[in-house]
Length: 315
Image 1: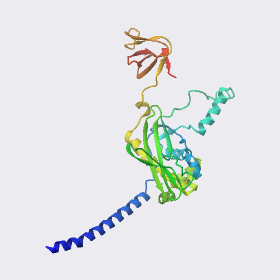
Image 2 (image 1 turned 135 degrees about the vertical axis):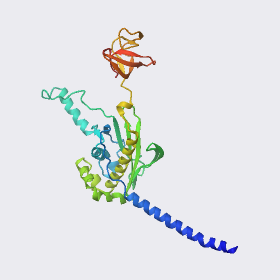
Image 3 (image 1 turned 120 degrees about the vertical axis):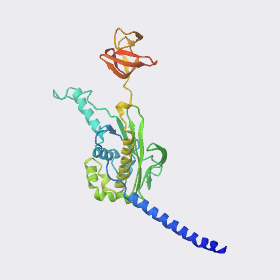
Image 4 (image 1 turned 60 degrees about the vertical axis):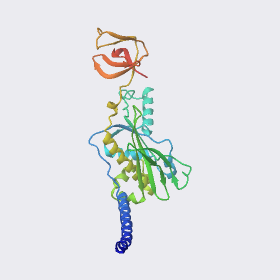
């Protein structure tokens, strides 16, 4: 009866030792996995939509001596060939000056610069760290907030640590028409991940051309760039899963009655009248059209057809 007990006492330390070895091996494998993060920018066969990359409200990057992360994300977006980019920053400001000159009659005839030419953005993408805390001037910039990560509930670690050379960043993609957040993802990187730079010189070369050279010239800049690349890869994975279509997923822009008319039950003047429509009333097109008639709903839920020439886009 004593022998099994003796064997048990002998085996138990072996199991503990084996468990420790297994745990160490798992931790080592995890470190290797993190060091071998994905560095390939995903490439699309066709455009998902038009996107504007906007700067976050707090300019946290200035404390690190970096340029705006918007320039960095534009590099990833252009190389992925997934988006048509529109400029809502310095490029837009310059374009507005040109349009002002045209509006004042300063342009040559045939310059073809004027209203109704700007391409609308389907989505906006904001690159950020989670928030900015009181330690921003010290060794760490950022903090911690709660939020949605890849459609699930999680914690967004926000911050850039100069001491440990780590970065935790966030990308938020929003539908311009509905203001619905399509995806919010977190990206993480640390100093040991910078090995990608040796074989990824193409990335750093593009940074300089895009006005984001500080992300290649400094170690912390490279870490932040890697964190954003990690986030962008995750973002594209989420977008490919949900396959959003900004124009199809949103209702048509509302219209308002410009001249007194009627709401008909069918797309003909001979159709029965649902109700009278007064100037200023707001209508919501369903997208269905027949000739000059549009099918609409009014604010009371009535559905019918209206003559499109009697309406204008709501302002």
